[in-house]
Length: 316
Image 1: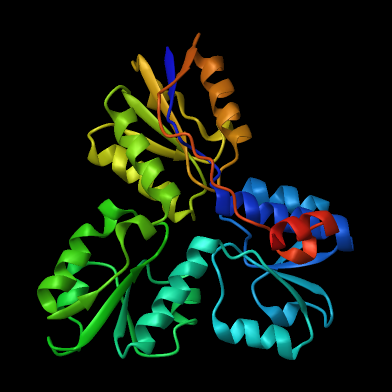
Image 2: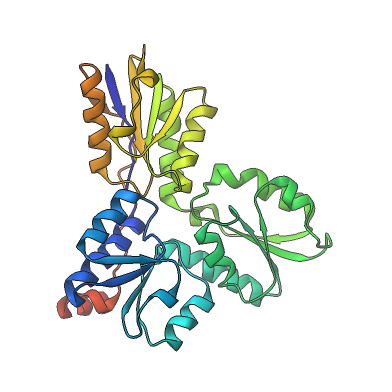
């Protein structure tokens, strides 16, 4: 059986940065450090950091006064940041820089007198954080129907921003609906869409051309991992979201000559290896990787976690 790996797959630069922040904080300050919400949406990553001394909480009220508090990669609302200041917490912000860029874009549009329309999934922590950073009128939409139902006159100046785990392809229809609904619309360039989301979705489409079955390694609460599975299904290939090798079902693979494997942006490569090992226990396998984009993006860590030499290099 051929096992074909998508390229790229797995960790993106924002996830790597967020995990590094927690690990370096544990090294510098010692345990415990407190992380608001899961640092990234992956149980294996969270459990590994918990074993090192990280404590995950949903509310800052669970963090002792004066303790180290880390905001997750998804970002937080302004009121959460203000609460941390009021309580004297020492904050390290692991918000993905691309999420922070969306926050800044939204606020800039508000300062121009526009209503901001956020395209995203209701209830997702990134969406809640983004809405909580925009100090002005904003609306959340998920579908083209939501756009049509907005309680705004057609002449209202509007601007749109998007949840970073949605790709250009995911948002194209909703953006077009906004353009039809309103006369004065602006939005970010497509180059501002999260590179990792778009790259992983494009890689799954390539995988669907050669695989009989697709396995997406990722957590059930990971938005980008769920979307990868949906894209495989939309391409006509049976696709399954799988946390690790223990969740592999032999019935999924029966009769398959080529099994495609990819991973969401918050899934470590060790879990991909675990799934490959599980496949190897079902049948002899040959592993190959598709050609694809080689990502070399890196994001800077907070200055507090850098050595004096690294801080000086960052300043330069």
